[in-house]
Image (cartoon, rainbow, N blue to C red):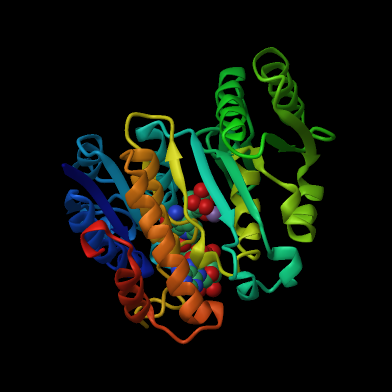
Length: 357
Ligand code: NAD
Ligand code: IPM
Ligand code: MN
């Protein structure tokens, strides 16, 4: 089967983790009879340099003509940098938000799983990390990231957190439906004790629960407590559903559990074409050294196979091989010794592909 993948490598470690993942996908493709056509398109800071904008038209069109979009990570150094001095509409991060809106991917799945036998990679106590298997479902095309008014003048800064009923209803349905296929429990995270927008969120979540999914367990947590509970006892969670900004923050926090931000994958769904990218950013501090952890991108590719292309067996193969390579010797961010290329070779070698057996 021919599969067309629009690849957006992005900046700094983005291209490093993407090329590592494509190497693995090519072996998977051969083994499972998938004829991947990887086409790379400009996106992020490199697109600003070449086209004057982070999401150029050529990329906008290409993603809509693909079967799935695989992205690395985009953005510049966090301090003073020319990309960070551009007007808001031309900034790299605005390009990321535009891409999500353009694809209509309102539902961002960020699984946090500690593979059995790999709990020693966590900075948390092994017995705390062991068995963690939670899924953060982050609303991705609404909330404070997109609300109006929004302005920054010399006198004041304004951002607005808005949720329309339909936006909460559709992410609630994703959360309840996903929970039915997993542990049967949803935790909705908000700040309803202070924010009207969060009380609305909670009311709508409860309405969808009562009328459509009464059989699913539902609890509510305030976001400040949720942050503490996630690191104190991550096993108490199954599906966490939350607003755009809260999900952004809680997913980086949850990366502590498996041991590195470099291992968390994501799938952004809800439109005709899915977007698959690691949770981490472009990590300018380690770029060019050949040490970036490609696991988050490889597991995002597995999510692409599972949710975007309905190739579950190929997805399983990547997850198994990543788990084995991590058990042998992980990358340096996880306390191992392998660089990106040695780790990638190990994953390719460990792939349980049918043609090998
Ligand atoms: P970051 O995720 O890039 O890095 C945070 C820390 O984690 C750094 O110490 C980094 O070295 C480490 N790290 C991240 N990924 C790693 C990996 N794969 N292997 C090993 N270590 C890894 O976050 P930041 O420094 O806050 O942001 C840098 C840039 O990335 C900014 O421009 C930001 O806007 C952008 N960003 C982009 C995305 C995206 O493309 N989706 C996501 C987050 C941040
Ligand atoms: C993420 C990133 C992005 C976000 C930024 C870079 C726009 O932090 O994907 O988690 O906030 O959504
Ligand atoms: Mn983030």
